[in-house]
Image 1: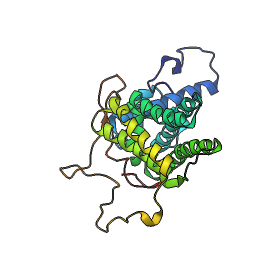
Image 2: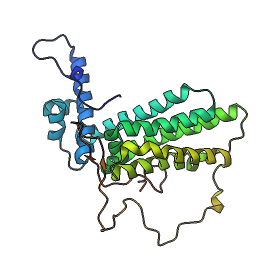
Image 3: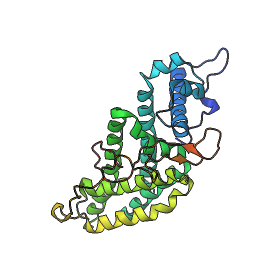
Length: 276
């Protein structure tokens, strides 16, 4: 996916045309998915309506319901397509290099570059997914586990080369993935997504440390205090939940696409819990 804008080649030619019903349906569905990404990154998931989506997609409401049961179903489908796109991009980048160290670096750098180049995707996948109900959380769980699997895959390749890589486990892989997400969320909140690549070296340093030393044994990890605040959402200084906007996410190219108020980085597992 190179863009989420509605390309002319996705439109149905006016008048008589030679497109099959299947091709028409595919084009409509793709426009609806892209429109959902554009609308939710600009307005937030909660504020986006089906009317908004069909207007941006240039389809009818009846066409929408031919492809999706409701707004949530459309957004979850868009989320799945977007996360698959950046995971695929990272895997392709890793496949172009030779050593496991280069693969680890290429995968992480590609994720940050993808988010910087696609701020609408960053806002939708990292921020707005938390507003999409249980179906959204389930989709996020699947995506996180797929992404974590690519991290573990690099460790497996390194061990096959004879390198002594400690077991990362779910905690180690999740630490890398969620750290990357946390920086993307923070840069969305600060209107600086175009600059988020500058945080890639820090996540890469974390990954290298974990690949070298592994994670602490469970008995060595200090438990959270009973007074620790639950971090489903982080309140701002004035007591309200943060609002995030992603620069460059508007369909017309204007800076500053609105994101939602759900956080993405922090403390959580990959089993569907919010990550703060």
